[in-house]
Amino acid sequence: DPMPTTIPEVSPPRSEHDEKMATMTATETKTTTQKAKLMAPSALKLLPAVQKYDWGVKGGGDTSLVSRMSHSEPADEPFAELWMGTHSKAPSKVIIAGADGEKEKLLTEFLVENPSFHGTKTASTFGHSLPFLFKCLSVAKALSIQAHPDKKLAGQLHAKDKKNYPDDNHKPELACAVTPFQGLCGFRPIAQLAKHCREVPELRALFGEDAAKGVEAAEKEAYEAQQAALKTAYNCLMSSQPDVVQEAAAKMVARLEAKNASELSDADALVLRVNKDFKEDIGLFSIYLLNYVTLQPGQALFLGPNLPHAYLLGDCMEIMATSDNVVRAGFTPKFKDVSTLTGMLTYELGAAGVMDGVEEHGGAVRLYAPPSTEFPEFALRRAVLTPSKAVTLPPSVSPRIAICVSGSASLSAAPPSSSPSHLAPSSLELSPGGLVVVGAGAEITLTGGKDGEAQVFVASCHPSFEE
Image (cartoon, rainbow, N blue to C red; front, side, top):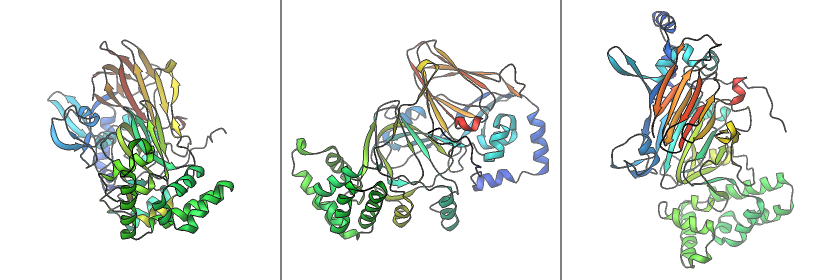
């Protein structure tokens, strides 16, 4: 079916930092207007923020994608995420060259002071933020089983619990593999769920016999009945008493450990692997309920609101709406909100929708975008450039962020000659970890370096938002 062309209204995500930006005095506003008349560069180097969550890859230096992209020194710490954007939890900074040398400034402040760089449409729709948050992830062990709220629920959760739900925005996201990347994503087809009801006695016990039989019977029923059966069974599982869950998990692990490796299914082997980090956790049972996917480099997953998922292992680039709202229910020592999670899920069943991207520039570039204009905030492009290969990306109505993941490339940015602008042409050389923010209205030309194939990711708004 053709995608709808109507773009929904998007309320700017609100944070304390955003509120601060919104309270500029009249004097500051006048200064901003004066500065806007000057020629801001079309592209600036960007400084990201590193997040050292427990599930990240330890070692620093060359041990992980995140530590390489952040040029980190060797360290006995987990390098989990690189944040690139304006989220107040870990905002990026731009490097501005001047007569007195280079200085750093928050990207948010630079956008306020340079409205031509920010873009009129982006500023009026998303306030002082970028429409997206761009990340690089290096995963050594399972992240929490989680889902992200839609906009309505995000507002409700933020209003009643700002500590655990720090903003009022939704968080649809898209992950593109840089190395083979493992994850759990969405509920399996009903036939697989019924099979696991029969083959995993500990799961069946936590479902309860009535709910388990309901899942088995649903194989021959309509899709809505399958969803209802899954919802009943999953709620029975997630509402089980902790001691009952722990006992069932211990029995399951002992049964699997007694088998030969050749007798284990992929799900069985994953249960044993994850149990080493999350012993007898309720999340182990979700391995039999969620699709177990391994993305190859260049493949991607779109994770819409209310979809259960968990990243397991590998490196990826991730882009999302500017939010940090997560509803967790397993594989985590953090706050778990089981009742919210089970209530928000849509219980859609089926194979995970792996994306190969849409070819552009003869296949040198692939575009990954949410399948609906309901999510105008983001899209991601992956450019793979042979030496001297050049591609030009047309201007965007929003700023874009480019990062070189491997090889070397040059990036030139400038407004089209036919379009008057307050942006001056810029040219920057990118090596691995090279990170640039490009202003709205500027074309981007990427050219592969001389030392082999280069891989560059470019984060932007959704193509529908350009219209």
